[in-house]
Length: 254
Image (tube, rainbow, N blue to C red):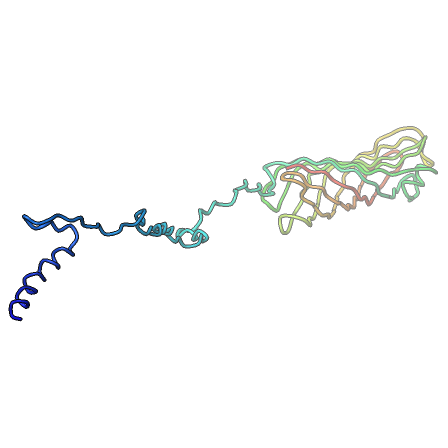
């Protein structure tokens, strides 16, 4: 029995070696073929990895309105217009006037109106001319002349005055007072009480008032109201005096 156990113990390692694949046969022994381990028909491909995600676009803040500039906007000065010249009278003045009026005459032994002296259908016209110097902003002095004429188709009487006159403006503009004195001439051409033509000379005084409207820089439009008193010396028709009231519009330049 001991011999059989020893024999089995010697054979057992050989059987185990024969079962290992690819084991070479023992030297001096018989050879045997070993069967390779079964292999797959095709190799299994390695698992594919999912593509890496694309990098996310950077997040920008939403657009905002531009902030107001820190400095104030440039301020442009307003346009400068030339200042209007002051309305002031110059060193001298000249003016003309035209209007109408009424008067009376004392002569040839009767006292009557200018219209009655001339006869029916008479009209009366007032004329004025003045020129002079501006003494102060309130006072003007110069020549002041004019006429109060009444006539119809056949007869006429004209009271002329040639005076030194002044105009006084209490507040420089607007309302004014007027005074004058000088020579007179009554020019007669027919009439109810006389025949023929003639001129009677004498003197006169004049007083008036008015209002001046400034139009432009050097022009005045004036409204005038005057009273004239004429006195005559001895003459052939005994013409003693005459007088008249006239209202007229004046045009004066300074």
